[in-house]
Length: 422
Image (cartoon, rainbow, N blue to C red; front, side, top):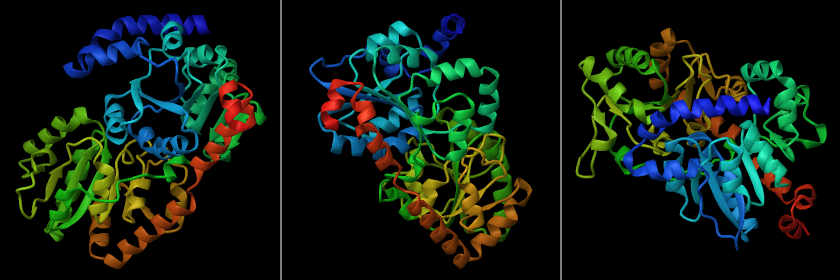
């Protein structure tokens, strides 16, 4: 299976490499290419812990853990890798003392070139890169899955190649998962029971800027944010919001597409509809009160703090079969949360529904629900208070991961970590 996978990966890489290279901004192409081929300069006199987080959501979730590692294990330098450019941008915004890099292509030679001198590899969520796991595992470097989750869809797919997945799981020293459901799925896929740890969800341990962006303080109207939206949600939500404006004309909708490459596409929707709007990138400090009904949030890494300015947060990715986006960021600010019918990526959302911290609706009912919440301040505040309570009651996953990292099982695998464990 490893040979078949590697051959398939190589063919795909050869075909897609030109596209992947040229789709990036010229300013980052050289860095991307070098790091994807494993050319990463490390100091042989330093000890490194490598953490991999795919994109923006995973980077934001791992920030509190990185800070905890830096506090508890100051003798280690941190390397943080991502796959996406947006993940790089957010990571660079948060850290000046962490080496930010791209994860090398999943070819053993490139991985060994980059990771031969690291002491520990932490992989956010269930990133099963076969050659990465095999190569690092064969270097006797401990590998820990953190914040692991296996969706129902992925689980069904993994079961079809269970022997291969079982082999991949053997390379992990620990498999730290979010809940018992995911633990049971790992057991069924062949994971050893003494490797699986239920740690909770790192995404509850939010580390967000405590201040909202300056420009949001000049918003005059009640504000609804549609956060991390996907195609075709923007057009559907705009239609619903036009219905809201007929009853609540002094309301602002901030649209934040999930992927930056879609900023222009969403702007074209607004233009085609003849809708007057503002772009976040064009709002400057000299402007006064902001009275626009529509704002396009065309900025990377600002959504989480912008939630602090809203009255209602609509979760993108939940009105299509994507599985939803993270509701914990608006919960951090104590905001009323509205979701579509598809929030499968977040098992904990049921607790929000049961406790009245979030509401679910179909797209055809969104207009009426928004009007209801906009006219009922007490309801919005109560929902926000309950959301914040749920968030606070589930914090602490980063401390449990830290216990695993400093524990004897990992310490015994490397002399460096063993010294720390003692």
